[in-house]
Image (cartoon, rainbow, N blue to C red):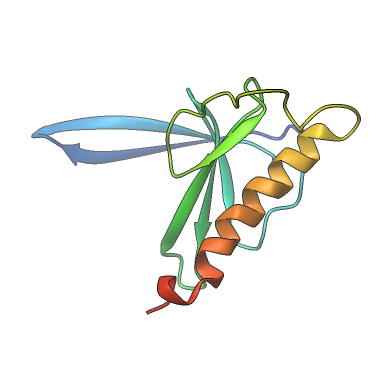
Amino acid sequence: MFGLREICSQSFWAEGLIEAITLEIVQAPISLPKGWRATSDSRGVVIDSFDDDGRMQGSVTVSEQVRGYALGIQSVRASNGPSKYTGRGWKQQLYADAVAALQAVWERPAARM
């Protein structure tokens, strides 16, 4: 079901105003771990990780335009020098590296409580 999109709306209270956010669920070019989701964002694709109880654990932002990623929800900066994401399969490798970087955060002893 590559390219399947689902629209979800959420409302939250921010600085005294109720704002509506529309999350566009997108299919990543790789299989995400169970319970994770990928959403379209003005900065690229945000991959959110959730634990078994459905609590959000972290995010990584992937920018296909810049061909890079950054932990958290933020703009992705272009790297100095040539990108390592070129040639056949670069998108899959970019997303695999982004997911691995987010998973690595939870493998460090200091991250566990």
